[in-house]
Image (tube, rainbow, N blue to C red; front, side):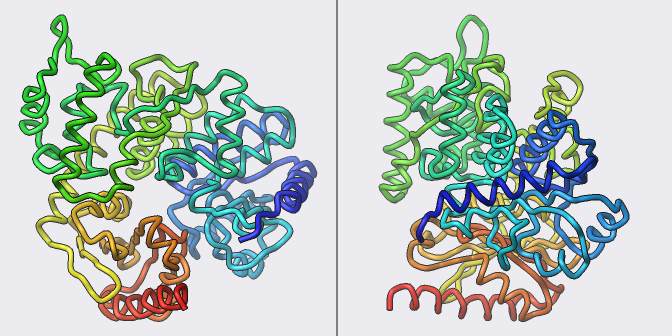
Length: 461
């Protein structure tokens, strides 16, 4: 894919010119960490430009959502959604712009999508990065770079150990302005805030046999390698360990992964870049970008995206405390979700594998659970997850970078398979989602299995 930076810059300029003409803008964003970060970036940018705004968060852009948007009758800024429904935006005559990194239906001059210009929307550019580039073009606004990094990490674009592509610009802007510190460290959640045994207990990417999901197993692990869990009566966190203790812990985790048969690439990803926000207090959930993004996901997945937005905008009191409580609930639900996957089992077809959670796992977190389940499943096939919701059946699909390199593009595959059974879908090459009618799951799977098979064959012809 040829990257066209100059054409991308021209399109960013075009998007800026549209915004500068408006006195009031409706910001419509997706409900996840990337969407919330992006909305916060957009709101602060509009405020600095003196443009009035309203905002709205959406799970998906469907008929009901369009009715709400049209009811506002305002110039609309679609963020982290919209690219898959450009024709519908035109048909509904919604005046506005789209900044989205999901696979686009078509290109228009009022759409800013990295895929159009040869940049991967799965690995090189999140929606928060797009909004930051727009904001950066309007003025300096370098102080907003940390939020862009939070969104990119929340979208798992650092899955290979570091942010690259257009996302890298946000990191570099943050570093130059001493807002972000990049360190090489263990890439587990909870290094700033959790006791070390809790950090490992709640680590599922990768799944650590005998430790993940087991408080007893995690405590026994640290006891076995001679690392004290408490110091002066207080639980020790990862940031409290000395260099030798960290090295010893990592060495033992690597041994566990080798014994579990994990790939070399998986083991290499244990350590990578960790992004620290220097202005945030050490030991809090907003100091480490990975924890910050998970905090935002926890608010969004349970209908409290506005709480996450307020945290992004600087609230470290009421809304921050609420977000922390939601995060605790979120981690418990993910742990329970993995237990349910074990219970229902993962079935395999020729080219894909799947599980059906019914109403046992929330449709808003089933995709996260699917991704976390990979390390207990077959890494050679994409994993498909089903969960019931009010619209029918939510489908979430996850692949690995290696599968994408073999030719798999989940967004294209899910869109075709979903439309075949009367649903709709979209997303990225590595992660995608769909909604299909209840009772159509197996018909959908059969179609999807064939599509994925053809994608792999075509790639290697």
